[in-house]
Image (tube, rainbow, N blue to C red; front, side, top):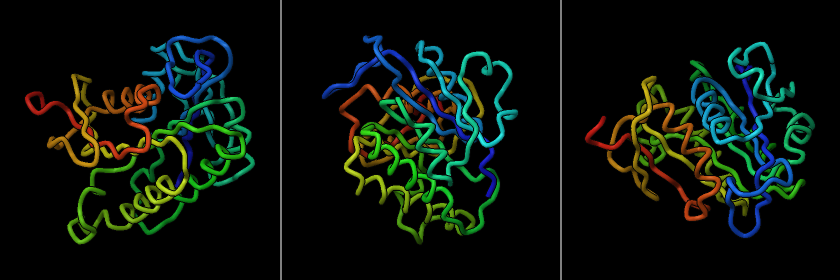
Length: 231
């Protein structure tokens, strides 16, 4: 598995109390994104547009797009190395996780092992809030998942199980096909798909950031898609 783009965001705009408002405060660093691929870039873009300071956690810093490089702090590391993850999560108060395998669909536990490190580090550092990008295939029974995706879906299930057992304020986001198209508008539902078969990568990235400050999503599985009349 190739884990060559892992990002983390931090910002100085909100000390979370019992509820989060990432637009109000200015006291200490606040959140972090682990990123693989285009969706992670879009989440970073969304966070930067919200005025957040971004810390990028990457195995290969050269992979960070040029247009974002001057807007982020870069920390080099590997999500499968616990010390790297712990160092990257220090002084943050929320986490966004967008892990992937690129085009590698072979059996692996890399994503779930990476998330295990993230959860452990969050607990050690008393960080509570995390949004995680998974897959709408998790709404299906395992036998209904196309064979080519069964192995990656199994690791997504392991990730979901880790979140549910974590006692964190997690948001498990289940997108359908992630399209490389401009953002429009999206809809979300708890514990089920809203019905659409596509989501813009920009809308998904925006929700992964926005939901951190929306306590109604904490501890929930969230289906998301482009609004049906626009898909």
